[in-house]
Length: 102
View 1: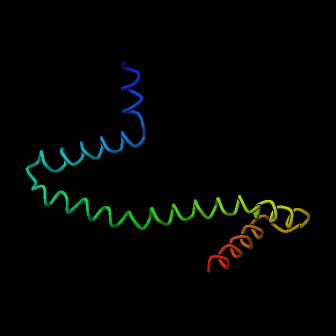
View 2: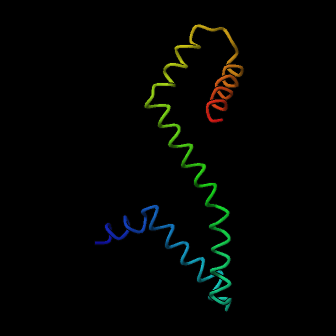
View 3: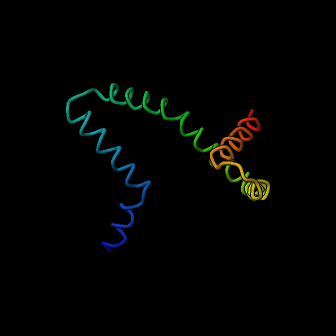
C-alpha cells in the first residue's frame, strides 16, 4: 500500500536516485541542454567525488580494524593514569596514527 511506497521512496538510496534523475531533467534536459553535455557534467562530478568516497570508505575500514584489534582500549589504558592535557594526548594519538599509516 501507501506505507510501502513511502518507505521505498524514503529509503536513502532510492531518494538519491530520484533526486539525481529530477536534477538531470530539470537542470539539463528541460532547459534543452544536449544529453552529451549533461552526461559530461555528471562524469566530471563523479571523478571529483570518487577519490573522496574512497578516502572516507578507507577511513571507516581502518576505524573498524582499530576497534576489532582492541587498539582503542589499549590506548585508553595506556593514558588513563597520566596527568597530560587531553589536547596533548589527542595530538600524540594523531601522531601515532599518522606514523602507522605511513
